Image (cartoon, rainbow over all chains, first blue to last red; front, side, top):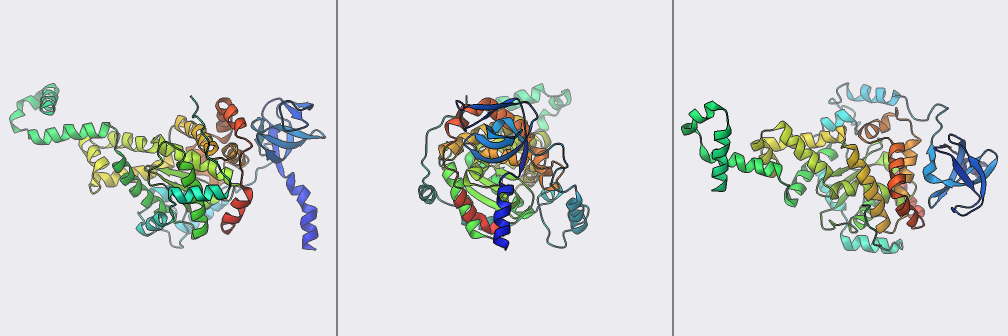
Length: 157
Length: 279
């Protein structure tokens, strides 16, 4: 039953990302500049975004389905309320750690401003960090396992 | 001899009363001061850079400990070390850590230490995305963005003598102040130009290592879809240009590089397998 539910949900999840066009952009049949243009999407067109391929993202927009350049999309839905907390978890953090952030009594830690400002050196954690470091040869072997090959690419001028 | 002449010149150029007290001046001390001012303004050597970074890193892991998962830590170190090997500073003591914190952020520490938070790792979907973010942080170390900011801060807030001591002497009081300042800097952020430069270099470093160059833009788009008022991203948004601005800047300067290396490896499956303990 759970499995069937998951299968039914899959197609919905695949289109779960709301986005909009940053500028007027062509909706292409294939992820390529020379592919057929299906329609012209004006700036600020709402789209449903799916997977990315290279510099292209598959989208549904205005009843058509095709590909747009990734950098012409803005993710998120500016019209609707955005996901994420509204400072409520921040309030909880304050409640748990004391308003100054210095009286941590419950072991709750994190990386907000006051926690950075009040951080004390932790030599034990630093020693662990050093222990996990990889050497150049080990990392090269790891890269080879992933079929990663080094290339020469210039920094931009 | 040159230093003495300089010291003498400084005294003569000073306020009138200094000339009257010339006989009481400790010339050796003055020479030291001049030397240290020189030290504070010149480039910090690599040994001092690493030592300063070690002190700052010790504080960052004091703010949030490492995620207690050796497999994830080793994985991120392998990706990071492979990226660093493709740069002009391959021999720094590079080390990478995932911090156990829900906030979405990453930090570059002088000398080759890079942190990303569990919160940021959870937002990623492939090794190419991780490589893009680590590439950005590696670029900060390569260009010494934080080191220069720390040096500037030391010179602005300490006397020339104390700044010189703080930058080269591990045990001085001034050094303690300097490291506090260096840690707080992660709350203030770098110049916008430094961040945009790190984005451009990060894309190149990931491409050199064989990754899909769109990894970093892809993470930026994920961040763009988050609410800036969310406390998990508040600090990161405060200390960086808005994701939209960063994407726009990458599009303007890096489109040819992005497209030339768009079909390289993403390694989604390896990323998911190696990091699932963090999910």
